[in-house]
Amino acid sequence: MTPTDLYSSIVRRIADLGEDSLLLLSQYISFLKWQEEQWREWPEDAPPTDEPADAQGPPAAASRPPAHARWVYDFIEHIREATVTATKSPAGMEVRVGAAMCGLEQRLAIWQHPPVAGASVVQYQLTVPPDAGRLRLRTKIGIRNGSLIGETPDNYVAFRFYVNGVRLWSATKNTTTWEDVTVELPSVAGEFITVQFVTDGLGDSRWNWAVWGTPLLIGE
Image (spheres, rainbow, N blue to C red):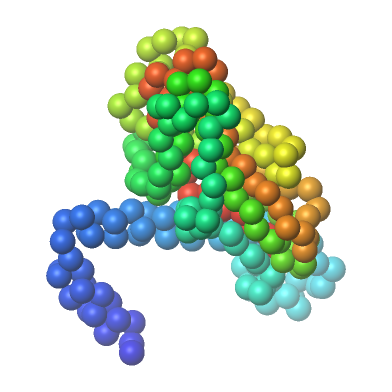
């Protein structure tokens, strides 16, 4: 099938979709676009080479790691395998996957509104491939549009990221914008690990519409 035939086939199928399915399709297209943008950043992360420039071929091809060297764990794709708990009572907690609009940008996200008291914990357990020598979390954190959290200066939501019970990163936020997050993980290649996404209302969970935008674990 040629690209033109494939495109025509996709358009015909889209025409048969209902309104709810079209919304889901739009969300997934946004995710795919974001994911492609992440791959474009790999040339900057590629290790230097000692080969002369004329032996390397086109710069983009020379600097990008081979496809087999990249491993990606999509936390949204594996959300059904996650365990959701509260450190105290789950009252007021909401955890699900959905489209999230922060500022002028919409992306697929894990919604993680913390409970009235304590913190919300979304936990994953997974095995890292033996050849994933460098491992990092790539995501965005945000508070969805419509939240009035910014109207109370001392109302913040805390975002935290843990691996094997160790907190590797944390931040507080009270603005409805996306912020890029990159967290380098310790050497855990070939290991079975526990990863936790945590949000905490810090004593005031009102308007804590916290979201993790398209979180990925990337290894090479």
